[in-house]
Length: 79
Image (cartoon, one colour):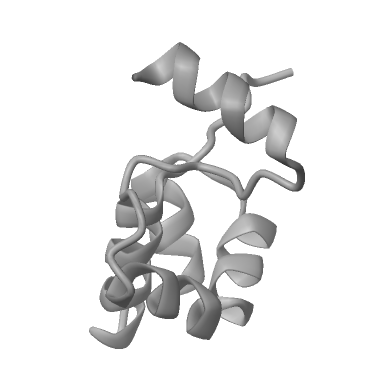
């Protein structure tokens, strides 16, 4: 089984931009070393990712944190 690959917000926005340049989902999956399903899900949620990127969220964030405790731990760990 391969290792899990989590793309940062910046990488997801890059993937979305590359998808507009006529690259297929198969090529994007190979380029970023992720599955075609992950590419599909990123493109499906592209408005959310682009909105987060334009609102100047931290680009290195890989996942949204659902509660304050997780955010506090994340801030202390990666600060």
